[in-house]
Image 1 (cartoon, each protein chain N blue to C red):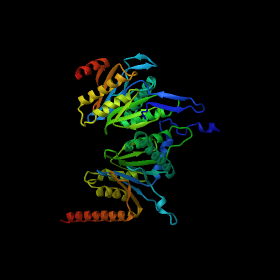
Image 2 (spheres, rainbow over the protein chains, first blue to last red; image 1 turned 90 degrees about the vertical axis):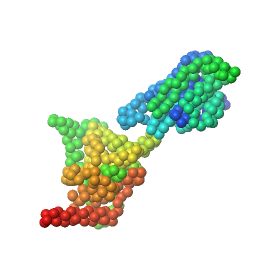
Image 3 (tube, rainbow over the protein chains, first blue to last red; image 1 turned 180 degrees about the vertical axis):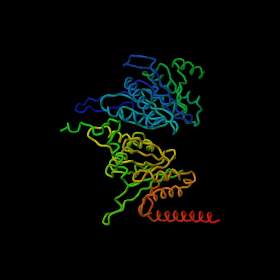
Image 4 (cartoon, each protein chain N blue to C red; image 1 turned 45 degrees about the vertical axis):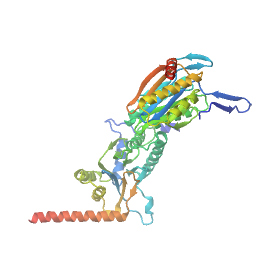
Length: 228
Length: 251
């Protein structure tokens, strides 16, 4: 699901379309106190850095977050549409929508456009009556439940940090936030297409809150100082 | 020929009535009685079984149907209309499981059925469904529920209710006898349902069909033997009561 190169043959000709994972690093993982969502903020158009201050976490509603990887327009449009559906569900059924249902609605919406060129790899994160919820949904029609996802060109570097950091069970909120931050920082260090700031969110039983926004260069100096 | 179907059948009368809907409610009043009781850990549905012709297979005449593992309904009125509504409700229960990854709540499926019925009171060339339904079941959190819908598309939650022929008599009986004691145990709730039906059913236990749902268990249809046992219990209780009253009078 997260292969670095996805090759697909173009019907008749020997030409193959090689699709790079889109320039970004987004990360989310569950732990005992909820879900940590960490993203970078760089937008690239080829080798040109279009922006260093993109908001890649979309606030669907006070207890659901979505991340953005792939086409920015596709992600923000469909997630805003999802927010509308979630609100209608809440009004009709007098209770919050579950993370499973919200991610299913999104997956079904984009599946109708499969093959038409949508580009979206998002993680739907939230807390419902069954506890913390984390789903990966993309424009290919994948929808997977999991405890840890990293999406984007820098995802491999982020996985390395989080996989080793999650070995110890029972992280505190601070430790988990630090882990998320560090993972994105390492990804921005090595991946040219990720950078800018690390935006960190924590989803808990009362909803989500924005923990921090740290510039990657400041983090670099901080971590270098710690090493010394 | 499309012109034939673009006029609504259900239109307002000068004094604000929808006559087709009211006629549909009359059709419901002609159907055989159904009663629903919401207990503490059990929900009970009882229907008056119409006497079956000699050559007819009894099994094919069923007025209590499951909509999903945890929801079932009984109806009063046109059987053919009920079949359509039940089919749509069953499909919706599964669609809900697919899109929301959760079983329906009793309120949700009732709302769906009621919305369906309302649509047919406001469409071209269609008449309303001639059925009232009693929908019972348990929600995910274990709360028992009983809802009633009628041909106009309204729905309400009830503690106990009756529909069909002589529904008024049964409802009055329930209003007098539905107490916390009466539904204290599962058995008592079942007996209350039978007592309510015995008020209007002619020949006793043979013409009663009873079904129960207990929390986290599927629908269970009671066998005629079980019903007979309960009917004899009820009759004995009545005799004991009558005896006690006589003794009180004489002393």
